Length: 224
Image 1 (cartoon, rainbow, N blue to C red):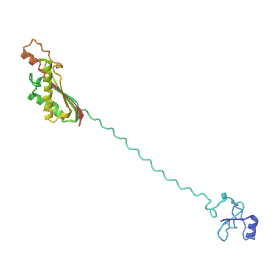
Image 2 (image 1 turned 60 degrees about the vertical axis):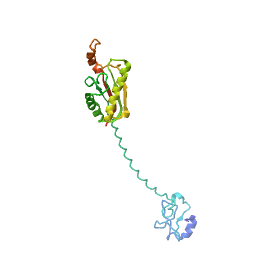
Image 3 (image 1 turned 90 degrees about the horizontal axis):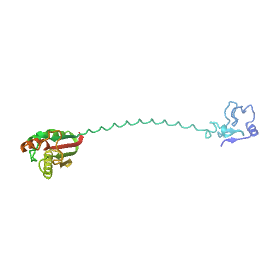
Image 4 (image 1 turned 60 degrees about the horizontal axis):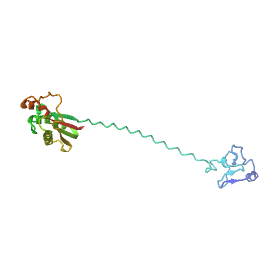
């Protein structure tokens, strides 16, 4: 431990002022010799005056009381660069189209058999286009008839025509699971064609009504 002595005792210990005398210093808590060095005992302890307080601590005598230098604050890690914004997802283009077996690719009167001309039309306007679609969600095939005959008969005939087209397309690789067929019978006459008078001969009337004997194909899907 450091030793603390009174002023009177200090004079007795030091003896003659000429040999060792306290020098006036700004720190009166410790005793200094004539050279300005802190006076220490034989065991290396500093002599303190009665005025000493912990505030007078010095490095030679009171290293434990001195505030240790605060460690340098660690350098802040650099802020990470913000991740680049994700590129907007490209919108898939629709692969929707329609095709119709019209007047020049008609079914024969009272027939549900595809003509060679009708097959060529399907190959060009449906099969080829399906090949450019990445995913097809619906192929709707609708059969139609002319107005001759009963509603019940024409309904069944229109359904057979739709099924004939479906069978052909499936044979060309179309997905049967997304195909739907329906018959409209004679309820939806073709638009934009001349009206056919019932006064025509039966042969002329059948020829005039040919555009109504048709099948329409509607495709919904996404492009590749």
